[in-house]
Image (tube, rainbow over all chains, first blue to last red; front, side, top):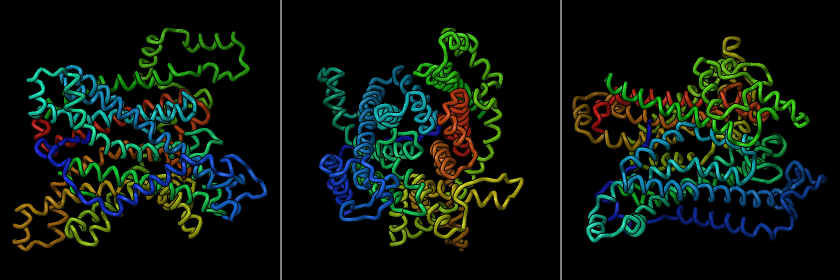
Length: 289
Length: 316
């Protein structure tokens, strides 16, 4: 398989983690945007309108004091749909990579630590999973399982497992040969103790950086599926489905597609930016951004 | 080299078997009985049982898998119960569209990414370099369907230069055909070039510091020749790698882009099968695409081995 090997250089991997780097205003702007989106999603219940309240007289109404971002093609408040959509996008976007990081991280660490047949089996079965173009597999499984937020989260989570497995395995492979692990083995530490107390704290940072990139990818894939009408079922609003609906009225009211599009872009960009900065911190071979 | 090819081919067999098994299991184990889908909600239990028997759905699962695999190996992927078309006919009809789209997209992506990468590598650290690297990073966060909406709005709705949706076969009207492909291919290329540029740029910065580049300069070779011939050649492996990694993304992207721009390719066939719950087409096309993807990766691996002897001797 043509694959990107994510190796971590043995000599520099650990020493640089503690090193401080300038994080720049862009990094903090990204963090601020993430906090804003999270806060809006958490406080969505305080809005005066629901995401499905229709007002047929106000179809595609421009922004007003009452409806800050105007109304969509069915007279629903655009801002309310945007914020409730954030709930869906963030729920799927965060929960799916959590599945991936838990299962993939555990498999990767076990494979990298114990090696042997187990490693061959894990790597081989991940190769099979990777043999499917991810979007195709996601589509096929949703088609059979039915469209729901839970199904979508599970599928996207499973699809993320191979990537997390690789990151965890690559990091574990090099770490497992280091002196502190050998010392722990010499002191008679159990495998569980070495894995959890010696290896996990070192593997977790590259995994977490990758997790943030995974969130960005998942938000995009969820958006793409919902855009095609194959993701979350209507009338639930998600950024992808809003863009898809806005596309119908691109000539009359382009903002209906562009507002969720910009929101989604900024969110994905924020996760990419923070993830990439953290990755650069944990892997000093690559220069920052 | 032959031994290497044989080893990799042997490795392909279990992967392909596993792929077919997974495709079959997704289609068979998940809820939703094919007989009900065909007959509709009003079907009587007797009719359903009869149809299940006809289709062999009452057989044990391993037997169904083996008989399905046997048919597939003989080139019989099944037949749509909605249109009566076989999976192979449907795929053969639509494959050229998808391939044309992906080729145009990858060429456009390379045409944008490679010159930019070279320009950035030559002036690495300059304002231009930093601006382009930043733009590329930003573009990585633009999903294909977002770029599609933007391009449709700009070129089809506002400027009215290009059609937003539609398709004519190349044989009937070559110019018209290409006009329909401009926006879809550009959409995919916009997602492709940042990856190409980022990787190639860092590769080139390293290459430009090599002694033989200094020698070429000292010999008085033209800058363009040094950059495009001497410096680009060692990066060919990188380009093959990126192209290989991109295939999976391109297939997924093609699915979205074909649906948005109404191009009758494989992706649209799949999405259409999903809307109409045409499970036979779905299963056949997923297997076809996954197999094609595995084979493409195999070819990329072979390219690798040709380009870098260390890989085929197992030192890398």
